[in-house]
Each structure stands twice: as structure tokens, then as C-alpha cells.
Image (cartoon, rainbow, N blue to C red; front, side):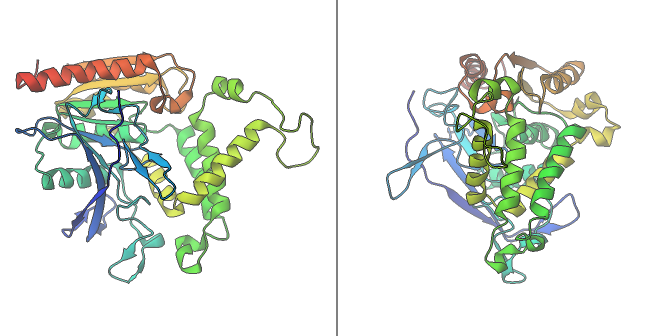
Amino acid sequence: MTSIGIVSPQAMHFSEPLPLQGGASLADYTLVYETYGKLNADRSNAVLICHALNASHHVAGYYLNDKGEKNIGWWDNMVGPGKPVDTDKFFVIGVNNLGSCFGSTGPMHTNPATGKPYGASFPVVTVEDWVDAQARLADALGIEQFAAVMGGSLGGMQALAWSLRYPKRLRHCVVIASTPKLSAQNIAFNDVARQAILTDPDFHGGDFYAHGVVPKRGLRVARMIGHITYLSDDDMAEKFGRELRAGKYQFGFGIDFEIESYLRYQGDKFSEYFDANTYLLITKALDYFDPAREFDGDLARTLDGTEAQFLLVSFTTDWRFSPARSREMVQALVNNKRRVSYAEIDAPHGHDAFLLEDPRYLRTVRTYYDRVWQEIQAGGAL
């Protein structure tokens, strides 16, 4: 297996207003995306990859900076030549969502109506809004139907939303380490993280760009809170335990434990590249996702309109999006007589396992995409 190599992002501008679920609309917006592989003659081999909270369109391959350092795509172990999602077979698209800080129109971009950054005035967007924008991009690229729409975590929510909003536009739906809605505990974690940002004096009500500052303290704490939820207790114990940086207690409020050092490092790094308003928007989109809400919480009724075949994968130590949530989706699909495959991987890494190297996990995805490829070659479903 080899890397795709050096890749370049592309951008597409849309002038037609995009109606949003919150009642607002967004016009004159840009979506940044990357593509890998080649679209076949009948345009049947396209795969859409949906990203999670702090990821982007840069799914695979790498960029080179002036120092020759590589910025490798966040799912490079999954997507590429000879990899589970094989770009020698599939035409893969990664799209940066609206509201992001990685190129697509978001709070840090100029509002054409005011000539100033959107800041706090950028409208709240939902998972469904992202999917609608992705569908417009697919239209512009001439893709009427995806072979598969795939994502992990928040990306899995988008894949599920695709199966509900555009049931005829995807043949397979791949949902990894995800959930049909957040639990109260998850919403609580998100709100504490948002409060860390909102109460940072440098936030300035979301319009900190005009002040030439960044609410780094709030971003650091938000990332530290989030990162704790991505790891399992076992993984933390194995990596850090109760190891002390100096070998003894310092009897102060600085860094004593290695886990404290690690979390602060993650927080510092995150605060250097991520936008605070984007963090607020994306966590709110996570909170709001609940397609069964329109069906009195009945997930089976919700999924009745789907037509895709499904692969769901969960990880035993993922307590943020637990296997029980994936099994709930599987049961609802089975109740609707959908063709569904499910794998529950015994992995120690918690929620982050969907990004990591696990032979059983990668083999599961590879086997599924082998079947998708066989269908394409056969010209229809097997």
C-alpha cells in the first residue's frame, strides 16, 4: 500500500442561497474539497467521505510545507491505493463543511453584506445543512448517486443523514463509531467546552477577529475536555498511568502528572489552528442531530425511508458513542428489512479507535468495499 502522494485542495463557489434548518440562509459561499482516484465513465464509483469535528477535506495524501514537512490526511490509513477505500478503484471526495476554519465559508470569512468577518453572526448550521451543501457539490461534479457515503463520529451522522435526506443518491451507507443522537452526558460535555470559550475574555462575543486576539484559554480547555472523552480509561492508564514528570509531587498547581502534560500539549496545539466560533458551531450541530425527533423518537420509523445498504462499526471501549448506539441503529434497520452488516471491534483506544490502525477494523472496511466494487463491476446490486 502506498500513499496517494501530494494532493491539492479545490474550491467551488455557490451563489444560490442555501436554506438552513434554523430559518436563515447562506449565499455566496465556498466549499473546499479534495478528490482522489478517477471517476469512471458511468460515474458509479464515487465515494463521499464526511469529516468529524476537527478534521477537514484533507482526507488522504499529503501537503508539503516550505520545510519539506508532510501534512498527512486525517484518514490516510483508510483511503489510498490498495487501502480499504482503494483509490485505484474508487473516486473519493472529501468536503470541508460550512462553518469550518479549513477553507469552506465560515465565521472567520468576510460577510459580503458587511465587508467584515461573520464572527458571531455566522448562522448556526446542522448536520442536515452540511448534507444539503454536499449534495449541491455532487450536482456540480455531475454525480447523481454515490457508491457509498462514509464517515466516522460526526461524519457518521452525516452519512446517516444522507441515507435519510437523499435515499436514492447513495447505494451504501458506512457509519463508523457514531450515534443517531447524543446522550445527555455528551451534550453536557459539549456545553462545558463551549462555556470555556464563551467566558474567555478574549472571545469578545465571537467578534475577536476585530480585536486581533484569539480566545486561546477557552480553546485549550475545550480541547482538553473533548480529548478526555475520545480516549478510554484503559488507554489512558496504559499510556500515562500515574506517572510523574519530575518523579515526585511538586505540591503546587502546575503540571505533576504526565497525563496533565499531554492534555495541555493537546490544548495548546489545538488553540493555534482551530477557530473558536467554528468549535461552537460544530458542537452545536452535534447536539442538534436527532432525526428520530420528528418520529416521536422511533428510530425504526425514522429509517423506514432509507434505501441504501449499511455497514456499521463500533468499538467496545468507545464510551462517548458506545456500541449500544450502533446496535440500536442496526436493530432499527433490521426491523425495516434493510441489508446491514455490523462489526463490533474489541479495541482499547476509545472513540479515537476509528482513526487508528487496527487490522480487524481495516479488514472489515476493506471486505465491505470489495463487495461495493464487485457491484460496480456487475453493473448493479449483488
